[in-house]
Length: 226
Ligand code: 6PG
Image 1 (cartoon, rainbow, N blue to C red):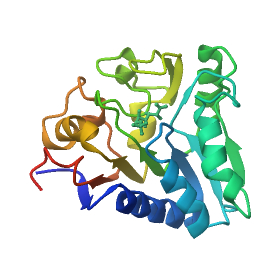
Image 2: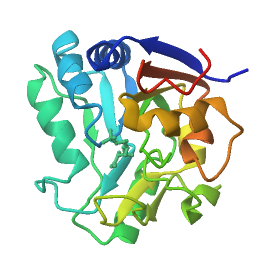
Image 3: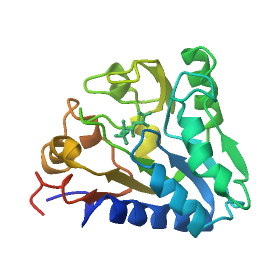
């Protein structure tokens, strides 16, 4: 029994393509789109820009950010600018970046206020090998947040810089949540997130949208009974 629609595809390229199609569809439909950083989704973003070069009806948000300046190599803003925004013919109606260069609490307060009244049409999530998603790390206090839409958080994994992350209530309101996880290094976390009882030890097991889809390649899905 799963509350998640599992889509297992052959390899990392097919997973990126499947995610790109969902992102492109959402951009075409318009509304608020939340994207994660990390390395996993880069090719999906590049492909989404090709499939749907007009993002004029969409507004872009970050699921989480590393607290570094926007031109830093670790910045999720920079990754998404390079892989997605730079390839678009028409930019989003608004690009809501987290001010990674500001003190984390201040940046989180600003983002929380900016998110007032916003419901994400799509939230694109990654999973870390430790089971984290967004910057919600295993057993972290941020997992207990019930009011705010964005909070400052400590990193549980590299890069060890403070984070700003959307919270469980903000993410739970998302109309469609898409997890993208590929490679055998994610198999254990994927097994715990989608195949076992929800637990704060595996934040990705606790974070679900109103509808949740998990796009996995075979190596990442290897510990799931599919
Ligand atoms: C971040 C990401 C993060 C990511 C996972 C998976 O800033 O670290 O937004 O939450 O989605 O860590 O990252 P990879 O795709 O790099 O494995």
